[in-house]
Length: 157
Image (tube, rainbow, N blue to C red; front, side, top):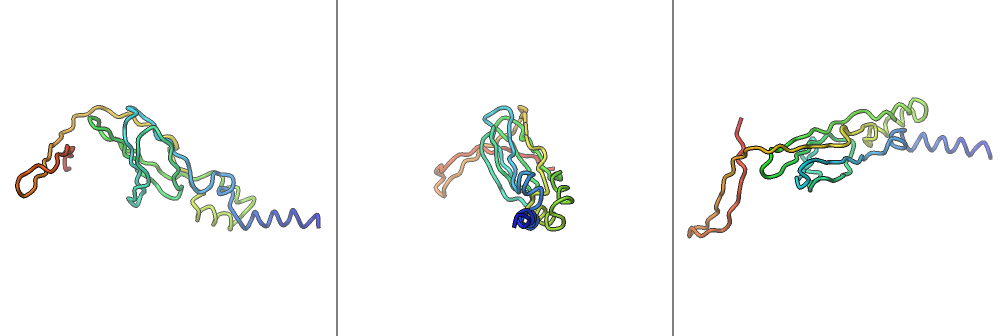
């Protein structure tokens, strides 16, 4: 019976997870977004274009490791900065060569634990820029003002 317990633990570890999923932080990762000025807004979109998060900096968000992301940081009167967050290889996947083998690799890649997001800390310094702003007035059919909006003009390239 004493011999059965270590073998059962080893088999359970082999069948339920990979090294990166267990030791390397799992399938999600914290990403810090910092910068100046601190009132700036951020938007995170996945590589498929889905908005994952938005808010004000500084902040920390939890993102799935499976995807790559684009972070836009903006503030009126400043030039918008875009940062790419890419997937790197999580070093813990190599532990599957010792424990886990094929099952461990499958679990790590299927859950996204085989990857790490780079950079893990995004620090953006927005630069003041000249922006062309259009003031747009929305009128009803009687030419009565419904609302006014300031829109930033972006050149088409």
